[in-house]
Image (tube, rainbow, N blue to C red; front, side, top):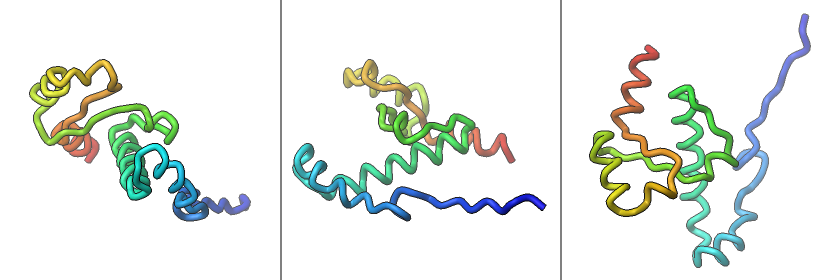
Length: 104
């Protein structure tokens, strides 16, 4: 019989990311930004896993957007705002839903 494997979630389970609050306060003016940032990191990781494009937290901190607009308009909105060169990806919720349905 193989030895059992025990896995633990690290961030916000074993480690308190609240220790980062002073950094968020200093750089963003408000420590309340930290939980929002962390939620976005989780969302990126979950979406990546669901779409077969897993990204670790270090990579997820690079910029991407998720929009409820269809892919074309979302891309044009980001382009018109001059943000596209700074982003790695523009994803629509519809694209994500399509990927999830294909897997079922």
